[in-house]
Image 1 (tube, helix red, strand yellow):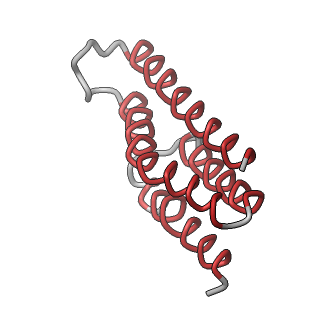
Image 2: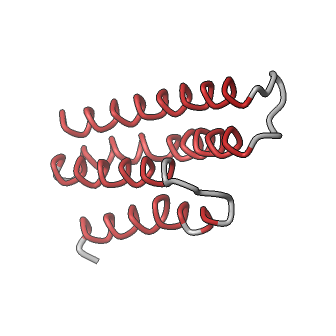
Length: 122
């Protein structure tokens, strides 16, 4: 289970990093609080941060429960694949809203669904 807990900690650290990157993007863009629109780079990073927050609500409990009932090493590996997909979707160069249409589907739905199917043998 220690590998699963390590992946959970990495996921939280990644979310905190996305928060710091969002703050940095706000500073570089010159947007003043409470403005949330007006600079594409800031909007993109803010969207990554909020999407990550939304999925963490389901990801962390699912990760910890799966680690309890299935092989912790396998669950930790699947969790890392998922976290790396989030990182990749966050930092693709030149990404704009049109480019991100398939990213949430792949990183938030298809990878975890495929992994769950492999774990259960279905």
